[in-house]
Length: 285
Length: 55
Image 1 (cartoon, rainbow over the protein chains, first blue to last red):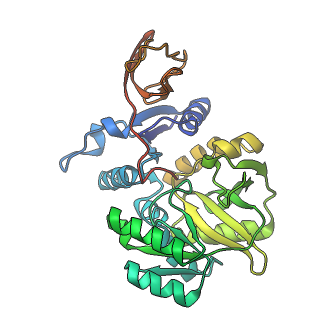
Image 2 (tube, rainbow over the protein chains, first blue to last red):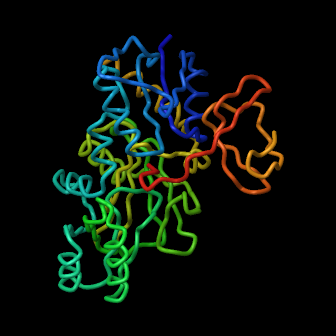
Image 3 (cartoon, rainbow over the protein chains, first blue to last red):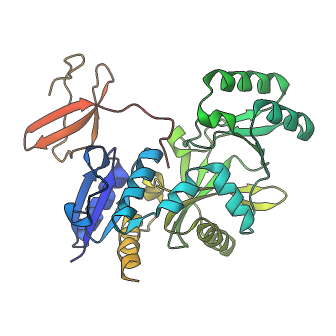
């Protein structure tokens, strides 16, 4: 019998599905609330019940990232690895790596001040999509369609002036059907995919109410997902693709602590089972 | 159990676990189950959605 630990900070249905599956597979399963855990520089692996492998499932990116750093300090095998979490949690880092590894990805412009971003927008032309480098569920993603919109958005950014507000990530607006594709990859392999159909606006996040619909994993999807997964360091991931009218499939995002509640509703694949088995197998290599 | 905010009635599922979020049907406040031991359940204020929340 193996020992599996699921680290969370908010117990969602995904974490409950993983727990249930791990128990059904006969593994000794521990649920650990990251918010209630104490770790220090003198801690050792044996002070905790982390077991053979940890699935890091915090909804807070920074909490999960820092917790993962502590786990790796303690030599505890964790899925995903710190480096994977660091890259996938930041859209700029992720876009650079996708491009570097030859994965087709939307053209994205990076500026490091409002003035430089303004100058770039005037040069490149509208529309571009402004995305916060850290964040999820489509929050703060805005189409910048004209100069007035740009001025308003940039003014708000200058007022809030958070550390990441000074990084301007502007992406070409992809001409595509009103949907995108979410693929779950486990160990570089696409295991399930769905279309996320927009319910009106241009965003297609399930968290915003997009409708999930099963999508067949074609060879093209399989290859693009394997390439994307390898580019960011592998593990358990959510790869997002768009169908560009001219360029074909492009990968716009790779997610670290992937949510699969929507996909679990439409696929026959046992997603949590695949995840638990992969996590344990990765420790045996 | 009674909502700590408005005294409304919050139903706690039998299979509820620590860390799970329950909402008050009357005032809409979210609470996290901090301790569940049989029929005895303790609630604490749930964290609000953070800028870094998500996938």
